[in-house]
Image (cartoon, rainbow, N blue to C red):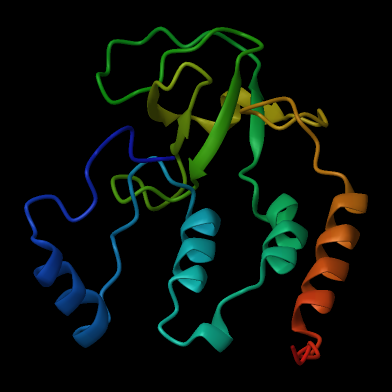
Length: 165
C-alpha cells in the first residue's frame, strides 16, 4: 500500500525470509511514505504470537483513529528546494511525519499529496482539514459494519457440534 511497488525482502530467498521472521523476529522496515500509526498497526498484526495480534473487528474499530491527519494549504509553495513539497493553496496534504529526521524540531513536516508526491512542508502554511472524507478514497467506514464483524467473530468462536453419520 505504501511501498509503491517495492518488493518486500528484496533479494532474499524464501528460506532467508523465514529465518529472519521466525528465528530473528525481524519485521519489514517502515516505508518512508507510511504514517507511523499505520506502521505500528502493521507491527501489531505481525506479532509472532497470534494471541497478541488484533482481530479484524479491533482493526476496523481502531482504524479511523489511526488515519493520518490531513491539513489544507493556505498558500502556494513553489520554492526551489528539491526535498520540499510543491503545492497550491487549498491542496490537501496527508501528514506522514511531524518530526522528520532532517528536522526533528518540527519546523518542517513530511507529507504527501493525493497525486503521490511527497516532501517537506511548513505546518505554518497549513490549517487542519476538518472534512469527513478519507483522503485516499472518499469513503467512510460505518460503525454498523464493525458490529456485524464482531458478531461474526463471536459466532466463529462458538464450539460446533459434530454430526454423527
